[in-house]
Length: 226
Image (tube, rainbow, N blue to C red; front, side, top):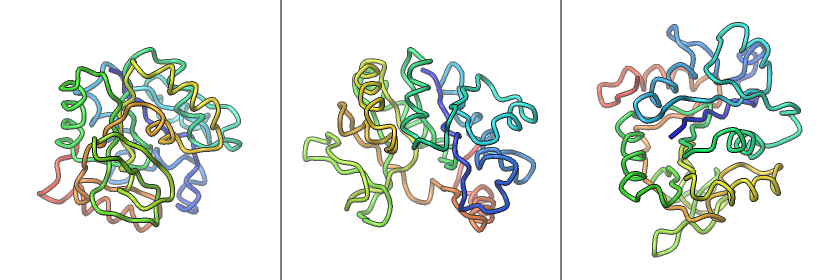
């Protein structure tokens, strides 16, 4: 399958840190988030595409990312448009990472392994255990089928998942109709199962303080991250 990193947005909550580059290309401890993510994906995919928008010229000039896809007018859309652009380019199963998350490599491997065990017939979405209603969340029924997504009571979306080639056409139709939405809107509208990602083996970088949290997380002997 193909890896896709969604990195078109600026990341305004990072303040001055994203004046020159999008959040996924912030450097800390000598590496960008993008570089760490691509290393995480490497053993599970045949290659990685990255969707760019904000300051894409700077990213292309400074970092020369593998297979960049540029979303023109990135500031007029939500990230549903980013995934739509990637799915139109990539005719394959797609392992998606938000441009601001890191996941323990064991859990990313479990996500990919579950997909293989299901013979690539279903989409998968990573979820953090524990109900919440303050952030975007996923909900599913007793059969394990995802039924809802949004600012709802549910399990927090972990910023990673897989869209099967089997459901690519349906995902494209959904995203085309919902360019002002976030891309996990695909999951309740296509056959999707959740995969639990432990909260302490996942980190999301939204604000400057999260860079220090990420350093501590990466240094922990409980975490494996490329």
